[in-house]
Image 1 (cartoon, rainbow, N blue to C red):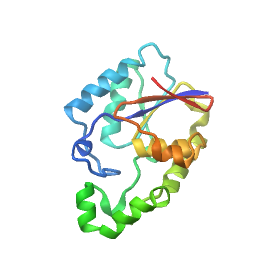
Image 2: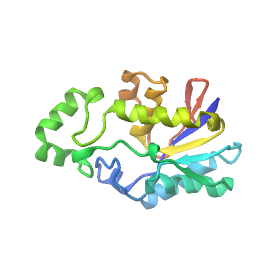
Image 3: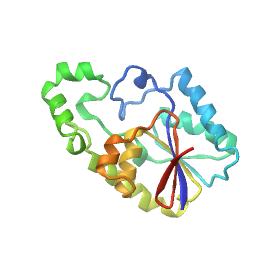
Image 4: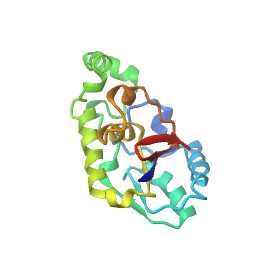
Length: 187
């Protein structure tokens, strides 16, 4: 099986360096341009389906692929970004000021940290694994447009990444990752 994972283009939350999570922030002009450039990578690839997070930054990124491929976008709630709970929409300085104890816990306990009123890595990994199990028969040749943290947790949940790799793998805006037979390559 071979499918593609795409992180959305640059968002206004990325510019503000905030934990946007489930906050619905739009793409910047640069993000829209990134999405158009990224979509060209699929011009010579026969795509089966396009799945996307319901959040606007992922939807607009998916639309760039969909219009070139003449495909509909299948919106799946389980693909939304990690819920950062109380710190949604805050940048690191704001978190340290308003929730200093949580900032320390987050630094010391990264892989096992659960955001107050939010999700843990395990929560997101299980959500991603549920999506994988429900849609596995349709994934071959498909594109999943989502979010950096979700993609990493998804790959952890389906046992492609371990916790060390999960914490030390970077996914930039509009990166395209191909997952084929358990191996990751960036295209």
